[in-house]
Image 1 (cartoon, rainbow, N blue to C red):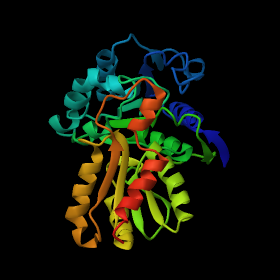
Image 2: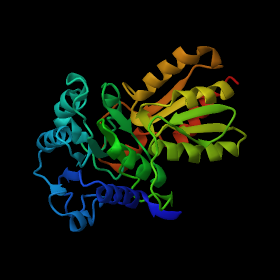
Image 3: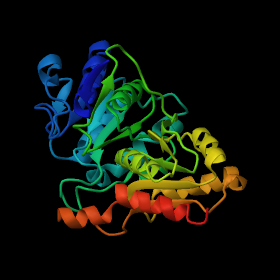
Amino acid sequence: MAIINYRQALNDALREEMTEDPTVMIMGCDVAPGGSFGVTLGLLDEFGPKRVRSTPISEPGFTGAGVGAAATGLRPIVEILYSDWITMCSDQIVNMAAKMRYMFGGKVNMPLVIRSPFGAGGGVAAQHSQSLEAWFNHIPGLKVCTPITPYDVKGMLKEAIRDNNPVMFFEHKRAYQLKGEVPEGDYTVPFGKAAVRMEGTDITIVTYSMMAVYAQSAAKKLAEEGISCEVIDLRSLLPLDYDTVMASIAKTGRVLVVHEAMLRGGIGGDIIAEIIERGFDLLDAPPARLGALNVPLPYNAGLESLCIPNEATIMEAVKKALSDK
């Protein structure tokens, strides 16, 4: 097991898949010199400009090219520099990539991966800090991944590249330096299988991406106060592993869903609705959710930190959910 960071895990996954499969290629703004976050660094020298293509600054154009490439036999990986800019190519994703296999009766595969950094951090303001993953959870035909550990991000990217369906692959922009153990051999991490990061008995915290890191930190501090939290990292949102979630709630009787996206319209509401439908009788208290304030994220770093959940607000939400116990 090597200890590498999140960025290197992504780079290794891309290199290994491109080595094994000549139909795998990458396109997006500045991917040839390595991209703004350095994920594709060195790949141009190894695989050449036909397979590592820097494109004009036109998300609709190069995402549409990715759809066409996927439909005609390639396995393209499209990098959108910030997930906020997915708004510009939503037609290509929602009305083309997500629908093509269905509308052609399964005769056309769509092995398209759309990689994009998301989430707040670094004071990059309202147009570069959003978490829009819930939008795509609403669209049939897509898969949605949000891995946070180097192990998961490498294994799930390889799984995404090999999948014959379009995959929205969200990478948290504050995660690129996170380190962890990663096997040196080939492996994949399946979609729809959550990871229980910490076991507990008092409450279940259901979360993903950077909030899974904060939730574990909060749970460790709460344990010092005698509060036992079970932390579930969903890893993929579509498909979503409700079996693991419900098994945990059956044990704890209480649940808090945490995400960095704005609370209104966030995936937390959908998860809670599903929990109630699947196991209302398992709950000893109303399910709770925690998300960002419903405001554009500020440029000022201090104000930004006040808008999104953190270790302290997760601890506060847990205590509130347990207040009647």
